[in-house]
Image: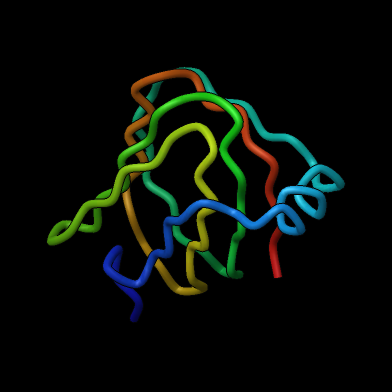
Length: 90
């Protein structure tokens, strides 16, 4: 089973930014919730601040970050600043 250590957080290429702009947008107010991924999610954060934890590890990301969350990951999202992101499931 993947852990938060398997999450990829990096700056996107120009081509990735263009691609992401065609994806749907998801928004969330500050909150904490559990999430289990049944598909791989790729997202580009436009606004906000998030820390995800799996009980052992944590990762944080914010505006401009390109994030890949693997299929099978179970984690808790801590949204400390309202989030707006483009997202795609594969």
